[in-house]
Amino acid sequence: MFERFTDKAREVVVGAQAEARERKADEIRTEHLLAALFRVPDNLAVIVLGAFSIDKDAVTAEIDRLRPGGRPAIDAEALSTLGIDLDEVRRQVEEAFGPGALDRTRSALGGRGWRLGGHIPFERTSKKALELSLREAINLKHNYIGTEHLLLGLMHADPGAAHHILVGLGMRLDAARVIVEELVRGRRAG
Amino acid sequence: MSDATKVAAAASSRDPAIGLAAVASLRGLLESLEELQVSNARAQGWSWQQIADVLRVSRQAVHKKYRRYGF
Image (cartoon, rainbow over all chains, first blue to last red; front, side, top):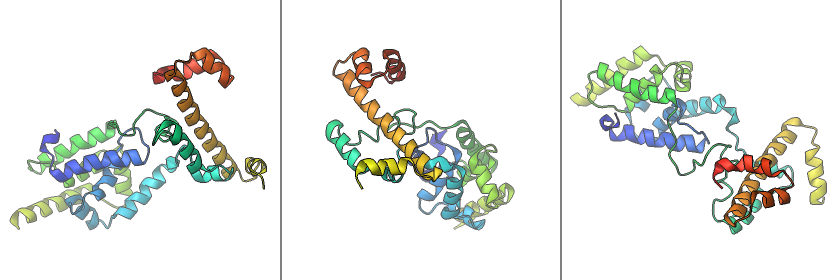
């Protein structure tokens, strides 16, 4: 499936890994794919979102609101209220066990798995969204999967957080399809 | 204020949001440090019983908790 992805669409998938990692998630969820669209400069998905006045800040705010549990398992600020200097603890631990030792522990990663540099699996709805982006491309008679199709797939994948965020921010699937069609036609013409 | 009294002050903070968050993070830090130390002890050939004795827990407890980590 990924062989039909454009370079930018691939960058989005890679970016979603980074999003999931930074948010200490153990799976790549649809909202990570959605956020990753904004990591790739100059792509059609962002233009389509712009047509609905949806920008990066709005999406990020919605994602943050979605999972308020985004606070780290070991929160430096909270520990400082106990007089514990996390930086100092980290320094001591790294002296004994090497760089990154404390942050690599399961507890620091949110209690599940050694995911720091490793591969993070796609959640089921994310996989579905990727499949749906293929279907969206086929329906539009496009022989590649670009960021614009990823966006339609995310919108289409109903139980996903990205779908709910996009609907909440005013995006409509039918209208988005029309915009994608026009944009792509315009690109080919121009 | 000495460190000990500071700890006592925050641990008894009347604002639950602050106090509980501090306890949660302290637990997280504790778990991280324990994991590092148990891993290190195993790597140095310590038995589960030896580790349990120093941690003041049962051998079963420490073994059950860390066995799946592959230490």
